Amino acid sequence: MSTSYPASQTALRQDICHVGRSLFERGLVHSTAGNISVRLPDGEGYLITPTDACLGFLEPERLAWVSLEGEQLGGDRASKTLTLHRRIYAQAPEAGCVLHTHSTHLVALTLQGVWRSDSILPPLTPYQVMKVGRIPLVPYLRPGDPRMGDAVEALLAQAPVRGVMHERLGPTVWAADPAAAMALLEELEESARLWLMIEPRPSPLSDEQLAELQQVFGAHW
Image (cartoon, rainbow, N blue to C red):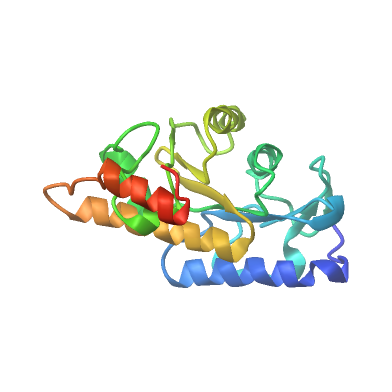
């Protein structure tokens, strides 16, 4: 597969590699787990990390370039999660980047038991409410199972969310660009870490506190 690509993709390719390296160096991804994609402008398709690639050692020219229909146009073979990413983009027009990791505390949360299926964590901190919001649980499916896309689409049809949590696998989140997706993932992982480390469990923010966040910042829960 040719590694040539339009110069217009250069900055986005570098952004993906920067985010992947940052996540890897801080232990938010490990080994070859996780993947990142971006939606290209003007209907040019998507960039996505290659299958079995370590996010800490990505090379810009080796990122997979695929068409809107999923046809490979360049780079190494696309991640097996490509279909899921494409279905998220189709359902979430605001998404410019989709990010999946196997973040330790979030996976541990699903092993221990989430708060509720429609929200894996209660509203613990104001920034969790403002930056992340509710994250629903996708019951366990093997990696690459085509039913995963159906499950995510069904959740998106119920309510607008910024991500989902795959039981025993990890979160998939989306945002306008790679930096914003990374920040969302960081806030979600930190919220899970707080929830797991505190005993007895802390009380959620009250209805009054949530209402104030909505009034002042437009945050929805």
